[in-house]
Length: 422
Image (cartoon, rainbow, N blue to C red; front, side, top):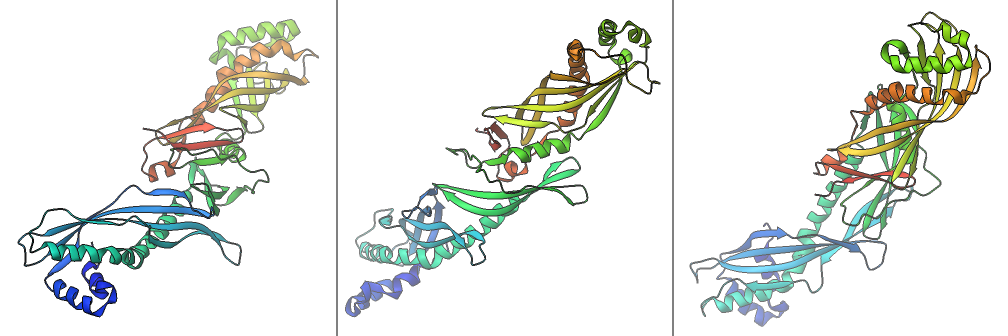
């Protein structure tokens, strides 16, 4: 609304021809003021530029200008339609730093339309026709000199806000995941920002830095989705490992799971009756997750593999276990969203391989204990891990972009987060 319309049409009236210019100037003296009274920015259009190295951004403008003249009591309204166009591309500095810039801003050819919104008397028509005729060459220059600097400043502000958004830390309990901007790229009609990632502890110290992968990350096609956050598999694994560190669980089986305790005793009796007789009411099971779970992503699904050590003690006072088992276990990993939080849940658990690591009751086939150990893991380990995952991971970028809910899906090498479709 601050466009200097009147000044623009007075600068070079009648194409600079002196005689015609004097006539036009005498007509323009009847104008008290001419200014934009309303303006709307219509739906932006983004498409690959003609050179294929950038994005052409088209900004349609719909404006109404008011013309005040003593020749008529009402305001004469002039409808103006035009389109500003600018090119976004990647600029690389001498030091090799890449960033997005916007330039080549101008009025789109063939986009200008100027017309009157109401019928006028024969006294005012010549004045209105003169003004509309002068606005046609004046508007493109106004777009370039007045609107383009505003568009450039708005783009730079938007880019700064975007970089601030992607740098927002992701809370992982007392730790956090931090992203850093590395470089931009333009693919088709999409801007991609490559981000580095690192894990920080509660003191702000970096505990893990993720290197740039030699294998290119599969970034899905956006289609109608406004944005997506694609997180590499090793980063997802590290986030889960932070929430599920190695730990030791101790269970008095006869008190907590008496039926399972009796079935375990029956199985041990097959191996050694003497050992089974030593099992007291305080028989104890230790579960040690010596390594963090490892996620294995596939298209549309995920599994989690765990290495678990399980020990059975005759009583809570026994210093040596009856036996020590090494278990290669796996579960289905289910990612879903709740509002703007990323949720993860382990479904079921299976003992894929069981190894006898140590035995104080003689050698035996550990497969005899498959059912009992699986039940123990399902009843003890699985609820413990899902309990730690229950609060989810907040994805602040979703809400910061104005969306209430997130959506997620899996590719063969990444987790993809997008706004939920309405």
